[in-house]
Image 1 (cartoon, each protein chain N blue to C red):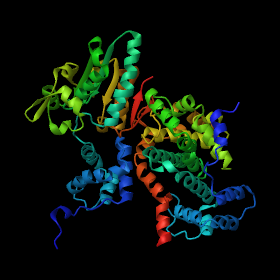
Image 2: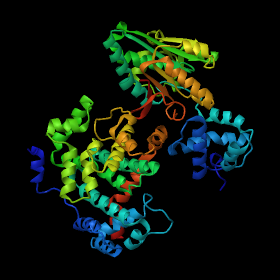
Image 3: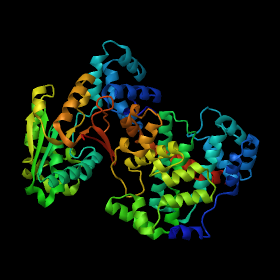
Length: 288
Length: 300
């Protein structure tokens, strides 16, 4: 009997040893960690890289990355394929939960005690706006009736004008909303046909702007933040640039503030300035 | 004055007991000139226990080579006396506590999940830091919360009340236990470990895993205290105490650092990410330890 088409991919499998070598290589170069349960995901993503490089198996691909002098070009393509170039509302729920239940209440309490009801957040690398609007919804949920007493601003920056344009429109499809709890969806989105528009109460909290992280002068001006989300951005920097940028983010934070990076991203070897905080199911970096 | 609840427990007549062979093995292990033959013959006196020890020795947790370990004698030769005693201890305690009546409850399942995860994480820390705790960190992690089983079994309603209180107040289980029951799972675990004649480090870990600075076995207890937190951070906890923490501020961390271990070189992020995969290992351990398969073999 002929093999069904979907089985006949002739894609070579990724042996466990090669998975571990590739995983360590990617972690060392990008700070992103693929746990065992993401093996299939990595395999799928890299299958295309294999094809593009005309290589027969993952073994050869690994050796090319490691020893080919031209490999830095491939590295970039590899990072592009391993980071989901896709963002969605309430992405990485444990991180959002850590923000909602731990980091944000802690900051709000401190601010209220100081008598300054000001909250400043920065979604650094906000893409199409899913992240800053998510943060806005969570802030409104946490503040509840007290929202009018607070001066809340969520700065959201990106280098892509195209992404910013769609962030400004704030209209999304059902798929992007797949992780949004039903009550939140009802409360903060307005359905327009098959699309969903973020309500004005949330939009007014968010200030979108173009920012290139290489523009040191402008990045320096981003001051006084309580919490910064900078998820899956660092992967595009080399080590030296990463160190510089992360130390800049540290300066951009208020004392007691938090930095959240991607769910399986690491600052080990990049910065020792922050205190690593273990939240249930998520990590955060605190400036003391 | 001794705490009320400890007095009550002391007089409970149906407290679980350890298999007598396990008690004997632990006694033998303390004698300086014990032989491989002594230990293997002793374990063989309890065939179901011997079968479980062999099954565990052949599981992915302990097995190193590709050869089957078909006798206890061989197990001791290949793995060393300490590991075989470790296995005998954990298997006996888990069998004694695991067959209790409220076993099927989901909270109890979570409880064992947490204990096994703590043991496995402790073992990873031991490997990473080259502490050479010889598997005692695993047994310590596995058994650090045995006091909770006794509380759940004999003081179920109050224990549940403490559980709810810890969730409501976001406080640790032992604080809630102290308030509701007037004693903590650490004290109860310590009592049980002593009553059963478990190795002293297990009694120590039971009592001090939230205060490693008070422990006699500081290295084992510190490792378990850290592993316990990491297991909780992965939401494998059975209490309401899913608090956030800074590992580098923990007593256990300071103690290990003071002992000269290279704590700053540990990639904490990576260890944390690696723990994401621990659920599978936990399941495997549970299926290795559970009676079912052995019983099926026996009936085949």
